[in-house]
Length: 245
Length: 117
Image (tube, each protein chain N blue to C red):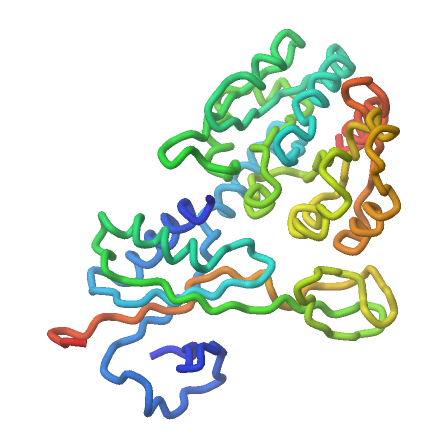
């Protein structure tokens, strides 16, 4: 017998004490559970966080929709930070090593997680997946780990993977309304990198409208304006990363 | 698509609490800010539970609207369908989410031994 139940009208609610359940299907036993469904993920995320902290590594979980420019930004990041910071990359990709291949050759340690197994693959990285990547990285030798999450504005926001900070890349080609359509993602991030700024003259993009929408769902996020392809604003992003250390 | 992996977590938790007894309904509480599609969750459950002792059970979803409270002026308000997390009265950005992030199994309903319904 539990305190929580649903009524015939579909409204569920909590009762402070047991009440008359006449009218309810009697006889069937009810087992109170009250267990968070992400509990297992969050425990593993905490273990990841502890492992990163023990190795003295700071970790940024980088998220975006597909094609917003995460990999290009990371490539530019590695070309600037190489030799100054010891960077590791955890690369989440549904099927291929294409993104990891684009990041090779900059001296960073790269751990690839292919999330494809059945039904077209997972749409996000979760804490156990990141955990499985840790043995592939020389954590004690690193200063910073950048996790390139799977391109998706929904699911990655739901899963704590043990990062110190969440950041996202938003491309101005995506439209001004995206923060309102994906408020959980935009709200989860400490930093929003507004990318593809080199295309601004061609798009008729309403920057004030976008920033207003962003502020509605996340009034405190830091914002950086970047063109990863042209290399503009990437230094400010690298400074933001350094400030995490 | 993450409803599938979520269903695996639900199966683990439900099986542990069922302890071998037959489950008819798994009651799940889902906050509005959890990006879970109830219909997808219910459908994925049929796929995931099929090969387990929980086959034949169904998921019942209780939705919880998102609600915020302004730390500046103390106004409490539903977030509604057009999400804005700024305070509707004073415009303050310092708001806390007081409901809408829930995602838990509240209870299991067990099948009656030998019952027909």
